[in-house]
Amino acid sequence: MTYSKYAIYLQKKIQMSTIGLGNALVDLLFQVQDDEALATVSINKGAMHMISEEQTGMIHKQFAHLKMSKVPGGSVCNSMRAYGMLGGRAGFYGKVGSDELGCYYEHALLSAGVRPYFSRAEGLSGCCTVLITPDGEKSMGTFLGPAPTLAPDDVREDILDLYDYIYVEGYMIVNEPLVRSTMEKAKRLGLKVALDLSNYNIVNSFREPFGKLIREYVDILFANEYELMSFVGFPVAEALGHVSKIVDLAVVTLGKKGAIIAKGAERIHIDAFGPPTPLDTTGAGDHFSAGFLYGISHGASIRQSGRVASLLAGHVINHIGPQIPDKEWKLVREQVAEILPSDSHLSK
Image (cartoon, rainbow, N blue to C red; front, side, top):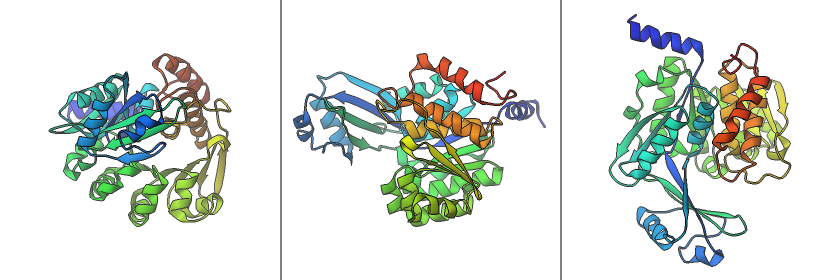
């Protein structure tokens, strides 16, 4: 074993780590004056539309006079950034364009302590244009750009081998060859595979390929109650009984009712953390997954990992947008350290 490989081996033994695979999208947020503004760009209130690069440019031109905010988006990116902010060793596989948004996205990951592994394409990076009306409702136009065109060969085994867990975004199922190839490589290298079902509409459209991938490769399945019911076709209690036979851990979020984690016949309920009336639930599931993966990969029990997950979700729903503000992370890390076992990474 060479010195460099031995150094990597020692680093892996110090703390287990997670790499994410997801759509690399930048969220561009505009606060518009009224509902009529949505009609001028053919966006229905409260809906999410898939739009072209041309439509994206038209919308941005229409609202160029308004202040625009941008944040790195994509659910697994949100999770990996939270994982990195906790101090975990995280990576992210994605595909961006050759534009300023791609550079911004890379910097946002690096600033959170996440190692980006990007493929690049000429042109505009994927972005989600979020139009916020005065009542707080969000209406979205999503241009995926090159994000879903990552090729199986872009995901390298020598990179995957640096990590212990891989977390895959359910939206990536539209590129099923990529997801299957990546999961095959991960299992061959000894990684634990975690999958988030992402959205009940995507589950309804891809139920059969999801089922095959979950049975063959997935160790940890994340879903909210509606996604799980869409996948299995039963109420949550029965659905958990089904999926707990084919995955090691099934983690199901229930909103204000907290979450249920199933391991075999065991059911562990996790109470919700945070305000009784959320300010914005965007990113709650992403942060729940990040907290759970961080806990379980740093020696915590299932219940402790669930409490860390609930803690992160409770913090993010107290703010507008899918991220916990930087200034709040010191408190979050202190609270997480109180939950985790004394020999965990954060407690040292």
